[in-house]
Amino acid sequence: MSKKRALVTGGSRGIGKAISIMLAKNGYDVLINYRGNIDAANKTKSEIESHGGQCTLLKFDISDFKNTTEIIQKELEENGNIDVLVVNAGIRKDSIFQKMKSEEWDSVIDVNLKSFYYITRPVAEKMFFQKHGKIVVVSSTSGQTGMPGQANYCASKFGIIGAAKSLAVELGRRNINVNIVAPGFIETDMTEDLRENYDELKKQIPLRRIGKPEDIANAVEFLISDKADYIQGQVIAINGGLYT
Image (tube, rainbow, N blue to C red):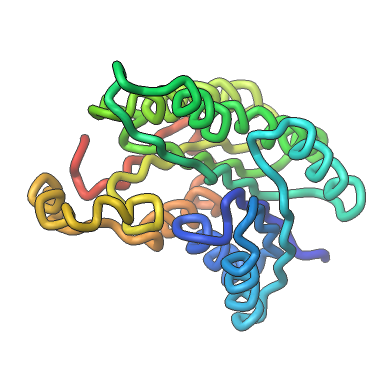
């Protein structure tokens, strides 16, 4: 039997990297999407291969409909099914709402929310006909509660939860699981600008620590397993108790 294949957007760094390595350790051939940082992508690829896994790098801009759909369609046509999709890539451009520039609003919505349609539609269509699949969407605690200075980010992360829940209702009858993980403060490049405030942030978190990318990968590992076959359209918060 051919090995199962998994696609992870933004899979070269941070949470995406941890998920990609976890998938490889679970026997998946991993397709890593990245936009521009080839050094990080190659480093993650090498790490996966050091564990005996297979990794393919797919360079495309998830906020570009034509670019994204062409690459994914080509991959599906040439190499077959994608069994697991992890929609992970995202950006932050924080600003107080009344000072937020239209570009800051639009770019975050494009990358974090619009891309969900661009990426997921062709994969979900393939899964629909193969009658199996696992889709995990990475949202955020900011997609469950408002955060000051993050109106654009919160809007995108609230939106992606709604989109994923709707998809879960549509695809459940085809044996396709769709679920969401909502990380809190996780130690990644995206939160690097918050590092000097980590001590204060920890005081707000009942578990008194900043999360690691592996904390998210562990939850995704469960959701793509047979043990989660009866979980559908749910949001699993991974935030140390910051928001319950």
